[in-house]
Structure formats: C-alpha cells, structure tokens
Image (cartoon, rainbow, N blue to C red; front, top):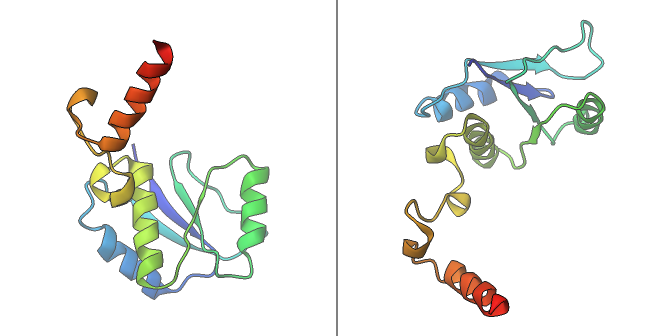
Length: 137
C-alpha cells in the first residue's frame, strides 16, 4: 500500500529535505513527499490519494482555509505545530502514527508494555484495575 506525505500550505525545499532526512530511518518511508499546494483554491484543484497523510502547515495565511476545505470534503488531516526541528519532529510523529510504525511514535504515547496486563508493572494501570474490581464486588 503506497502512501504519500502531502504538505498543505506554502512550503520551501528546505523543509522537504529535512523531512526526507528525518523519515529516511523510518520502517515505512513515504512513497513521496508532495508539496506545492499553497492554497486549496488552486487550479487544477488538489487531488489526494486514499492513503495519503495530509499535513496542514499552521504558520501560514492559508491554514484555516485548508482546514475548512479538508473538513468540508470529509478528509482526515494532521496539523504540524511548531517551527524548525520541532515541526519536523511533529510531522515525523504524525507519519509514524499514519504508517502504524511504533518505533516512530511519540515516547509518551508508546505502549508501556507488550505482555499481558497483569505483568505490565504500571502503577496507574494497577490502581485503575483495583478501583474497578472494588466497585464490582
């Protein structure tokens, strides 16, 4: 299944190169990084693949128009907050989630365990289970 990473909003080649570098070690590299869609009202209108990750660049004058356009078409999208390295990292995290690659997910949302629940050693989880079992009994 081929997927592209589509950047929506004015983009420069520097961001694309930095993303290519940041995503090169990913298990599932994007087929292509598509850019140049500055505004949603461009002619011809932008066409997106069913499995593309659409990323709105929020620091542009067209960010709200892109969000409105994508919501109106019922398309899912991510918003790449931050600037510089932070924005690149956020796009990388969005790609990992989109490509379902646990290695690239944000550390704070990675699963804390892989084994059965009673072996996870997560105190929060244990307290939750204890509270649930106490209510039921």
